[in-house]
Image (cartoon, rainbow, N blue to C red; front, side):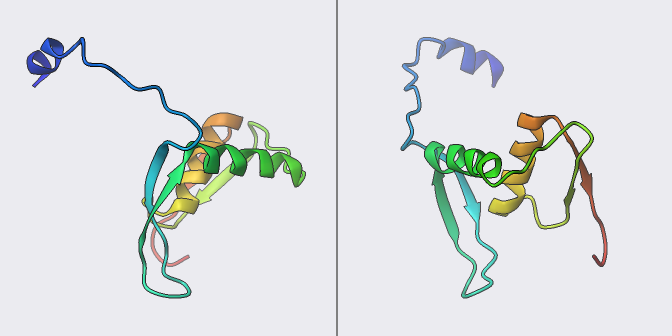
Amino acid sequence: MVKEGMREIDVKKNEPNLDSVFFIGVSSGTTSQPKLVMLTHRNFISGQVCQEFLGYNFTEEDVFYSYVPLSHVQEQIGHISAFIFGFSVGYGTGDI
């Protein structure tokens, strides 16, 4: 598979823009049936800016408690925030 991929090294790669799909996630279905959602780069950038606007001052000492399935949009936002701000992620198991 790696050798096959290396032969395709000259494949044109399109740079993403604000409206490119960044993530296909799963909604929880809290208000209706669960469904797939397509989020753009703009959606995720807005989510990060909103955190700062609302006064969240994340530091490396913070911990994000992850207990929702990783495919869920909120979990993805939490994990991306951890990467951006450098805080830890703790994974819950069993009954929360």
